[in-house]
Amino acid sequence: PIKAFLFDLDGVIVDTAIYHYQAWKRLANELGFDISEEFNEQLKGVSRTDSLDLILAHGNLTLPDEEKAQLATQKNEWYLELVSRMSSDDILPGVAQFFSQVRKANLQTALGSVSKNAPLILERIGMIDVFDAIIDGNKISKGKPDPEVFTKGAAELGVQPDECVVFEDAVAGVEAGKRGGMFVVGLGSPDVLAQADLVAPSLQDLTVDEVLAKSGR
Ligand code: G6P
Ligand code: MG
Image 1 (cartoon, rainbow, N blue to C red):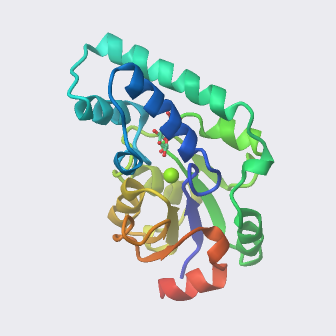
Image 2 (image 1 turned 90 degrees about the vertical axis):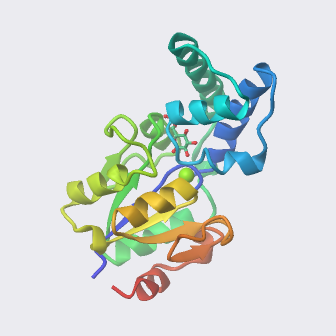
């Protein structure tokens, strides 16, 4: 049976995905090129350093490590400026309702985010005490699509991968959950998230009972 739900943060709980995109776009523009929303799909769920590598390759740029470190820091400063004004008003529609169903169903919860800023964001939106386990970018060595962030979450909760459902908005995150042996719910477009076991536009469009039934576990 399913015992735990593992949630990505950016784009699932809160709409910070747009702020990551805006900060990366600003950086690319300063470097003399642009990144489209379509290209940005590849960056979702991918760590800060891996995202920068993808962006530089997209702009046909090769830079020394020191300069890359500076650019990553610059992006993060812009990102932090954008998120500094966030509050519980920024929690995505349907999240509160879905979590109350999760509690009633006696399921455990973990956050599985590659973001090093995840604890800060959870504080800002008042959700730091909601999860039974928090795995973020500071606790892992491999970002999505590697399954580490989710397998660590399952381990910390004391459950098996096939007892977990993963909720993800990113192509890399869906792949991470699948590689981890979990049932994966994609939140977004079925074309983009084709690898997911079930796709819905957002948590607002799902009930816990429906997810448990469709998981067939
Ligand atoms: C999440 C986001 C990515 C972001 C990554 C690292 O996975 O979806 O867009 O690059 O976290 O975030 P950080 O806050 O550590 O730069
Ligand atoms: Mg995400």
